[in-house]
Image 1 (spheres, rainbow, N blue to C red):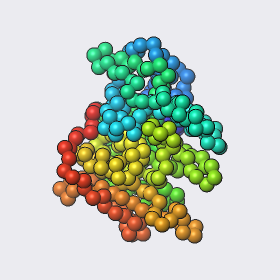
Image 2 (image 1 turned 120 degrees about the vertical axis):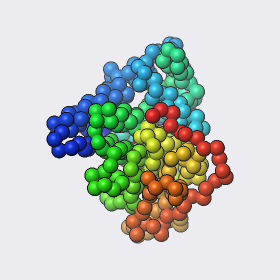
Image 3 (image 1 turned 180 degrees about the horizontal axis):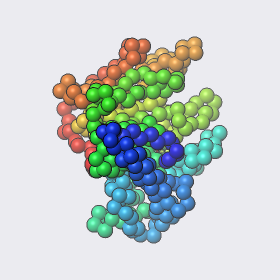
Image 4 (image 1 turned 90 degrees about the vertical axis):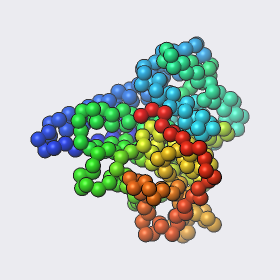
Length: 344
Ligand code: ADP
Ligand code: MG
């Protein structure tokens, strides 16, 4: 257990290097553990808790990697027009998602008051001296991006140690590189949002897959589900989607973009992904004319961005049962394609 979820690391080396492989696992675990100690809001002596405590007091120097993560967060906030926003911390607190403390809705006035403290524009980055200044009342929550960032750094570490191939899975954020053991592409399952089975598979030879869902952390009031993804523009948990899965060249991108698409919704979210080269995704939402259930059967529809035929290193396939529920997102007008990967 690390970063509030389960960590799974798999490395491949030639048989004579078994001891090195065991050391690789230890090293990857130690690295991700160190990021957890630095970025966790649950650890009173973490860097993020210290930074939040200094909001309103001017620039604070941070480590290079911490700076990189905040710069990436700022990049995805701008790209998503504020749908992805690490300054949601006071809202996540108000809605009780840190300790699952809430069974009722907060008063609307409280939401509106707290919302005034939320904007990525309240974070000032100074690249030259690697410092961060938070406006008074601002507090950061890296929960939507830190797992992806930690995985990328662990993947870098495994590569530099000479590992031939590896998979890291941190609570549904997955990254892979190198030839999978059977010589085929890696295969990452896409979970059914309500049942313990898969609706499809993503095959990729290298890169990352991340999912944001409404089924991990939520509470219900009058039959309505309020989940831990919050719209920084309204202050309310985002209704509408059940899950978003994003495939991207890095785990940081996949993690931040899956959170962003969840907030933006199917149409705006998938069109954002289409601007990013090498980035694909799918959304799972309640099926049309259903309240999610027909009898006891949950009904869903899926929209997926097309993977161009020339890209043979990624494919997204659905089970026979789910295929009829899948639509392909119509490609928007030709757009300027961005890299969408601020750090590699
Ligand atoms: P998970 O952490 O379950 O893998 P996500 O990557 O989607 O799922 O991150 C969700 C977490 O991100 C929330 O628990 C919260 O800490 C934070 N968060 C919530 N809403 C937003 C948002 N609009 N932008 C950025 N982070 C968010
Ligand atoms: Mg995320």
